[in-house]
Length: 171
Image (cartoon, rainbow, N blue to C red; front, side, top):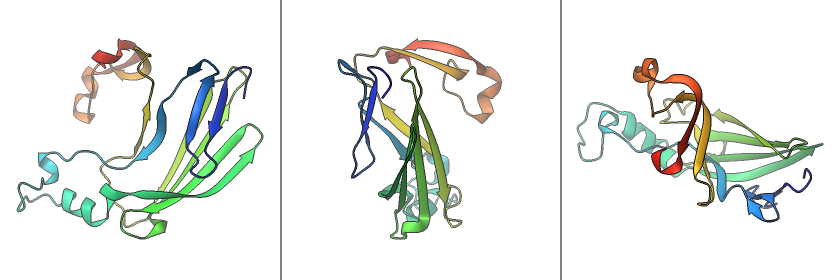
């Protein structure tokens, strides 16, 4: 807690519950670790079983589309609280270790740090990222990074690093 801003966590799951002031919650869900993304043609879609790319087949065999994480440890040191999860999508709890650490500063800003360690068999995962949902009342998005459109490594030259602002519907 910092002033009127509070962050609360579920002691059984480590989930960040409300984060905000008594009258305004800044998030509605998350952050949640994501290792999966929708497959594209180059990954070897199910509709093309003989596709030469083994990616989708390998991801499914490793259970990446069904990851289940279980809270293993909670550690609090001063203003930092860390939750460590272990999980798998194929029944090997050591496949994934995910530690998420939250630190609130004096202004009430919540710094979130993720550490993800994958079993050496989990190579070529589709993505490593997090999802976070915000309440519908928030309409503006601001970020420092590449933009203002979505980009991939082959489009980096056209997406310059800067500070961007957009309406949520245009994001």
